[in-house]
Image (cartoon, rainbow, N blue to C red; front, side, top):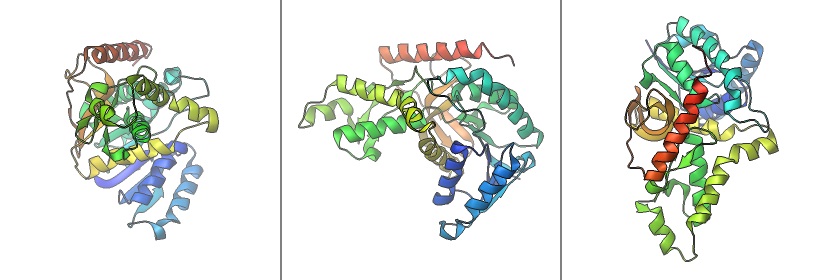
Length: 314
Protein backbone atom coordinates (compact mmCIF):
# COMPACT_ATOMS: atom_id res chain seq x y z
CA UNK A 1 0.00 0.00 0.00
CA UNK A 2 1.33 3.47 -0.91
CA UNK A 3 2.24 5.61 2.08
CA UNK A 4 2.44 9.37 2.49
CA UNK A 5 6.15 8.96 1.77
CA UNK A 6 8.59 10.77 -0.45
CA UNK A 7 11.85 9.11 -1.42
CA UNK A 8 14.60 11.44 -2.62
CA UNK A 9 17.33 9.85 -4.71
CA UNK A 10 20.43 12.03 -4.59
CA UNK A 11 21.46 14.09 -1.55
CA UNK A 12 23.33 16.84 -3.38
CA UNK A 13 22.42 20.52 -3.28
CA UNK A 14 19.12 20.11 -5.16
CA UNK A 15 17.97 17.02 -3.26
CA UNK A 16 18.73 18.55 0.11
CA UNK A 17 17.25 21.96 -0.73
CA UNK A 18 14.07 20.05 -1.60
CA UNK A 19 14.28 17.99 1.61
CA UNK A 20 14.84 21.09 3.74
CA UNK A 21 11.87 22.83 2.14
CA UNK A 22 9.69 19.74 2.71
CA UNK A 23 10.66 19.77 6.39
CA UNK A 24 9.99 23.49 6.84
CA UNK A 25 6.64 23.33 5.08
CA UNK A 26 5.53 20.07 6.73
CA UNK A 27 4.57 18.64 3.37
CA UNK A 28 4.75 14.89 4.04
CA UNK A 29 4.72 12.34 6.86
CA UNK A 30 7.69 10.26 5.75
CA UNK A 31 10.91 11.25 4.01
CA UNK A 32 13.59 8.79 2.91
CA UNK A 33 17.00 9.83 1.56
CA UNK A 34 18.95 7.57 -0.80
CA UNK A 35 22.44 8.21 -2.12
CA UNK A 36 25.28 6.16 -3.54
CA UNK A 37 27.21 7.59 -0.59
CA UNK A 38 25.16 6.05 2.21
CA UNK A 39 27.03 7.88 4.96
CA UNK A 40 26.21 11.22 3.31
CA UNK A 41 22.50 10.31 3.22
CA UNK A 42 22.69 9.14 6.83
CA UNK A 43 24.30 12.39 7.96
CA UNK A 44 21.77 14.51 6.08
CA UNK A 45 18.88 12.59 7.69
CA UNK A 46 20.39 13.10 11.14
CA UNK A 47 20.81 16.82 10.52
CA UNK A 48 17.21 17.22 9.31
CA UNK A 49 15.85 15.25 12.27
CA UNK A 50 17.48 17.70 14.64
CA UNK A 51 15.23 20.41 13.24
CA UNK A 52 11.98 18.52 13.84
CA UNK A 53 11.38 20.34 17.14
CA UNK A 54 10.92 23.52 15.10
CA UNK A 55 8.97 22.00 12.19
CA UNK A 56 5.22 22.53 11.62
CA UNK A 57 4.41 18.81 11.85
CA UNK A 58 5.74 15.45 12.95
CA UNK A 59 7.75 13.65 10.27
CA UNK A 60 9.71 10.43 9.95
CA UNK A 61 13.03 11.19 8.27
CA UNK A 62 15.66 8.54 7.58
CA UNK A 63 18.31 7.39 5.15
CA UNK A 64 17.39 4.23 3.28
CA UNK A 65 17.77 1.94 0.31
CA UNK A 66 15.83 1.36 -2.89
CA UNK A 67 13.63 -1.10 -0.98
CA UNK A 68 12.04 1.94 0.65
CA UNK A 69 10.61 2.93 -2.75
CA UNK A 70 8.19 0.00 -2.67
CA UNK A 71 5.49 1.72 -0.57
CA UNK A 72 6.27 5.31 -1.55
CA UNK A 73 3.71 7.56 -3.20
CA UNK A 74 6.40 9.72 -4.81
CA UNK A 75 10.04 9.18 -5.77
CA UNK A 76 11.98 12.33 -6.70
CA UNK A 77 15.19 11.88 -8.67
CA UNK A 78 17.80 14.60 -8.21
CA UNK A 79 20.83 12.34 -8.70
CA UNK A 80 23.25 13.13 -11.48
CA UNK A 81 26.36 15.07 -12.32
CA UNK A 82 26.27 18.85 -12.03
CA UNK A 83 26.15 21.36 -14.83
CA UNK A 84 29.57 22.95 -15.23
CA UNK A 85 30.19 26.62 -15.91
CA UNK A 86 29.73 27.31 -19.62
CA UNK A 87 28.05 23.94 -20.17
CA UNK A 88 24.52 23.75 -21.60
CA UNK A 89 21.94 21.39 -20.14
CA UNK A 90 22.04 19.33 -23.32
CA UNK A 91 25.78 18.75 -22.80
CA UNK A 92 24.82 16.82 -19.69
CA UNK A 93 22.83 14.31 -21.73
CA UNK A 94 25.17 11.37 -22.14
CA UNK A 95 26.66 11.73 -18.67
CA UNK A 96 23.30 11.56 -16.94
CA UNK A 97 21.26 9.19 -19.14
CA UNK A 98 23.17 6.09 -18.01
CA UNK A 99 22.84 7.16 -14.35
CA UNK A 100 19.10 7.57 -14.82
CA UNK A 101 18.63 4.12 -16.34
CA UNK A 102 20.47 2.50 -13.43
CA UNK A 103 18.48 4.46 -10.83
CA UNK A 104 15.11 3.64 -12.42
CA UNK A 105 15.98 -0.05 -12.68
CA UNK A 106 16.63 -0.11 -8.92
CA UNK A 107 13.42 1.81 -8.18
CA UNK A 108 11.22 -0.54 -10.19
CA UNK A 109 12.83 -3.70 -8.79
CA UNK A 110 11.51 -2.66 -5.36
CA UNK A 111 7.92 -3.08 -6.61
CA UNK A 112 7.31 0.66 -6.75
CA UNK A 113 4.01 1.71 -8.31
CA UNK A 114 3.71 5.41 -7.52
CA UNK A 115 4.73 8.64 -9.25
CA UNK A 116 8.26 9.60 -10.32
CA UNK A 117 9.29 13.25 -10.44
CA UNK A 118 12.56 14.03 -12.23
CA UNK A 119 14.67 17.12 -11.54
CA UNK A 120 18.01 16.06 -13.05
CA UNK A 121 19.10 17.96 -16.16
CA UNK A 122 18.53 17.91 -19.05
CA UNK A 123 15.18 17.30 -17.42
CA UNK A 124 12.93 16.87 -20.49
CA UNK A 125 15.15 14.24 -22.05
CA UNK A 126 15.86 12.41 -18.80
CA UNK A 127 12.16 12.34 -17.90
CA UNK A 128 11.57 10.61 -21.24
CA UNK A 129 14.37 8.15 -20.36
CA UNK A 130 12.73 7.48 -16.98
CA UNK A 131 9.32 6.92 -18.60
CA UNK A 132 10.69 4.46 -21.15
CA UNK A 133 12.88 2.65 -18.62
CA UNK A 134 10.25 2.40 -15.88
CA UNK A 135 7.32 1.13 -17.93
CA UNK A 136 4.99 3.34 -15.86
CA UNK A 137 2.07 5.19 -17.48
CA UNK A 138 3.14 8.62 -18.76
CA UNK A 139 0.84 10.44 -16.32
CA UNK A 140 2.92 9.03 -13.44
CA UNK A 141 6.30 10.13 -14.79
CA UNK A 142 6.82 13.89 -14.82
CA UNK A 143 9.71 16.34 -14.79
CA UNK A 144 10.14 19.69 -13.08
CA UNK A 145 10.18 21.17 -16.60
CA UNK A 146 9.82 24.93 -16.82
CA UNK A 147 8.29 25.37 -13.35
CA UNK A 148 11.40 27.14 -12.04
CA UNK A 149 11.83 29.17 -15.24
CA UNK A 150 8.22 30.30 -14.88
CA UNK A 151 8.81 31.30 -11.25
CA UNK A 152 11.81 33.35 -12.39
CA UNK A 153 9.65 34.99 -15.07
CA UNK A 154 6.92 35.85 -12.59
CA UNK A 155 9.50 37.36 -10.25
CA UNK A 156 11.09 39.50 -12.95
CA UNK A 157 7.72 40.79 -14.23
CA UNK A 158 6.60 41.46 -10.65
CA UNK A 159 9.75 43.44 -9.93
CA UNK A 160 9.40 45.42 -13.14
CA UNK A 161 5.75 46.47 -12.83
CA UNK A 162 5.67 46.49 -9.00
CA UNK A 163 2.80 44.02 -8.62
CA UNK A 164 2.88 41.06 -6.20
CA UNK A 165 4.46 37.99 -7.81
CA UNK A 166 1.45 35.87 -6.84
CA UNK A 167 -0.73 38.00 -9.12
CA UNK A 168 1.51 37.39 -12.14
CA UNK A 169 0.20 34.59 -14.34
CA UNK A 170 2.55 33.75 -17.19
CA UNK A 171 4.38 30.67 -18.44
CA UNK A 172 7.73 29.72 -19.85
CA UNK A 173 7.12 26.81 -22.24
CA UNK A 174 9.25 24.37 -24.23
CA UNK A 175 12.61 22.88 -23.33
CA UNK A 176 14.00 23.63 -19.88
CA UNK A 177 16.98 25.20 -21.58
CA UNK A 178 18.14 27.54 -24.29
CA UNK A 179 15.13 27.11 -26.61
CA UNK A 180 12.49 27.88 -23.97
CA UNK A 181 10.16 30.81 -24.65
CA UNK A 182 7.63 33.05 -22.93
CA UNK A 183 3.99 32.59 -23.87
CA UNK A 184 3.30 36.34 -23.89
CA UNK A 185 -0.08 35.85 -25.57
CA UNK A 186 -1.35 34.20 -22.38
CA UNK A 187 0.33 36.46 -19.80
CA UNK A 188 -1.94 38.07 -17.21
CA UNK A 189 -1.72 40.30 -14.16
CA UNK A 190 -4.65 39.27 -12.02
CA UNK A 191 -7.34 38.76 -14.65
CA UNK A 192 -6.04 41.51 -16.93
CA UNK A 193 -3.84 40.82 -19.99
CA UNK A 194 -0.28 41.99 -19.41
CA UNK A 195 -0.43 44.15 -22.55
CA UNK A 196 -3.38 46.08 -21.09
CA UNK A 197 -1.63 46.50 -17.77
CA UNK A 198 1.43 47.92 -19.50
CA UNK A 199 -0.70 50.59 -21.18
CA UNK A 200 -2.27 51.68 -17.89
CA UNK A 201 0.96 52.01 -15.91
CA UNK A 202 2.30 55.52 -15.26
CA UNK A 203 5.66 54.81 -16.86
CA UNK A 204 6.00 53.53 -20.38
CA UNK A 205 6.88 49.83 -20.58
CA UNK A 206 7.52 48.38 -24.02
CA UNK A 207 7.72 44.84 -25.28
CA UNK A 208 11.42 45.38 -25.91
CA UNK A 209 11.74 45.60 -22.12
CA UNK A 210 9.84 42.33 -21.84
CA UNK A 211 12.30 40.75 -24.27
CA UNK A 212 15.08 41.71 -21.87
CA UNK A 213 13.14 40.09 -19.04
CA UNK A 214 12.91 36.91 -21.14
CA UNK A 215 16.67 36.88 -21.73
CA UNK A 216 17.34 37.45 -18.02
CA UNK A 217 15.11 34.48 -17.20
CA UNK A 218 16.60 32.23 -19.87
CA UNK A 219 20.15 32.96 -18.77
CA UNK A 220 19.47 33.05 -15.03
CA UNK A 221 20.95 29.62 -14.36
CA UNK A 222 24.17 30.52 -16.15
CA UNK A 223 24.52 33.74 -14.13
CA UNK A 224 23.91 31.91 -10.85
CA UNK A 225 26.34 29.10 -11.74
CA UNK A 226 28.97 31.70 -12.61
CA UNK A 227 28.58 33.25 -9.16
CA UNK A 228 27.95 30.27 -6.85
CA UNK A 229 28.64 27.17 -9.01
CA UNK A 230 25.10 25.72 -8.84
CA UNK A 231 21.39 26.54 -8.50
CA UNK A 232 19.30 24.70 -5.93
CA UNK A 233 17.05 26.80 -3.66
CA UNK A 234 14.58 27.77 -6.38
CA UNK A 235 14.23 24.28 -7.81
CA UNK A 236 13.88 22.87 -4.29
CA UNK A 237 10.87 25.13 -3.72
CA UNK A 238 9.43 24.29 -7.15
CA UNK A 239 9.64 20.57 -6.36
CA UNK A 240 7.78 21.11 -3.08
CA UNK A 241 5.02 22.99 -4.93
CA UNK A 242 4.63 20.03 -7.34
CA UNK A 243 4.71 17.60 -4.39
CA UNK A 244 1.90 19.48 -2.64
CA UNK A 245 -0.20 19.41 -5.81
CA UNK A 246 0.15 15.61 -5.85
CA UNK A 247 -0.36 14.82 -2.16
CA UNK A 248 -3.21 17.31 -1.72
CA UNK A 249 -4.91 16.25 -4.97
CA UNK A 250 -5.06 19.92 -5.94
CA UNK A 251 -5.74 19.78 -9.69
CA UNK A 252 -3.23 22.61 -9.88
CA UNK A 253 -1.95 23.93 -13.21
CA UNK A 254 1.84 24.09 -13.47
CA UNK A 255 4.28 24.15 -16.39
CA UNK A 256 6.08 20.81 -16.05
CA UNK A 257 7.83 18.35 -18.31
CA UNK A 258 5.03 16.15 -19.55
CA UNK A 259 4.27 13.80 -22.42
CA UNK A 260 2.36 15.97 -24.86
CA UNK A 261 0.10 13.15 -26.12
CA UNK A 262 -1.37 15.03 -29.10
CA UNK A 263 -2.66 18.19 -27.39
CA UNK A 264 -0.07 20.26 -29.24
CA UNK A 265 1.55 19.48 -32.57
CA UNK A 266 4.26 17.37 -30.95
CA UNK A 267 4.48 13.58 -30.85
CA UNK A 268 6.06 11.21 -28.32
CA UNK A 269 8.05 13.86 -26.48
CA UNK A 270 8.40 15.23 -22.96
CA UNK A 271 8.48 19.03 -22.97
CA UNK A 272 7.49 21.95 -20.73
CA UNK A 273 3.73 22.55 -21.01
CA UNK A 274 1.00 23.62 -18.58
CA UNK A 275 -0.60 20.54 -17.03
CA UNK A 276 -3.14 19.78 -14.31
CA UNK A 277 -1.47 17.91 -11.42
CA UNK A 278 -3.29 15.79 -8.85
CA UNK A 279 -2.94 12.56 -6.85
CA UNK A 280 -2.58 10.55 -10.07
CA UNK A 281 0.23 12.72 -11.41
CA UNK A 282 -0.86 14.45 -14.60
CA UNK A 283 -4.61 14.66 -15.13
CA UNK A 284 -4.30 16.38 -18.51
CA UNK A 285 -2.25 18.87 -20.52
CA UNK A 286 -3.84 22.32 -20.78
CA UNK A 287 -4.27 23.51 -24.36
CA UNK A 288 -3.43 27.19 -24.77
CA UNK A 289 -4.26 29.25 -27.83
CA UNK A 290 -0.73 30.10 -28.97
CA UNK A 291 0.21 32.82 -31.43
CA UNK A 292 1.73 31.73 -34.74
CA UNK A 293 5.17 32.83 -33.52
CA UNK A 294 4.77 30.85 -30.29
CA UNK A 295 3.80 27.77 -32.27
CA UNK A 296 7.04 28.17 -34.21
CA UNK A 297 9.02 28.50 -30.97
CA UNK A 298 7.41 25.35 -29.56
CA UNK A 299 8.13 23.41 -32.74
CA UNK A 300 11.75 24.58 -32.75
CA UNK A 301 12.16 23.60 -29.10
CA UNK A 302 10.63 20.17 -29.69
CA UNK A 303 12.91 19.55 -32.67
CA UNK A 304 15.96 20.34 -30.54
CA UNK A 305 14.82 17.85 -27.91
CA UNK A 306 14.07 15.19 -30.53
CA UNK A 307 17.57 15.60 -31.97
CA UNK A 308 19.04 15.05 -28.53
CA UNK A 309 16.86 12.01 -27.89
CA UNK A 310 18.24 10.45 -31.06
CA UNK A 311 21.64 10.35 -29.34
CA UNK A 312 20.36 7.95 -26.67
CA UNK A 313 20.23 4.18 -27.13
CA UNK A 314 17.46 2.54 -25.11
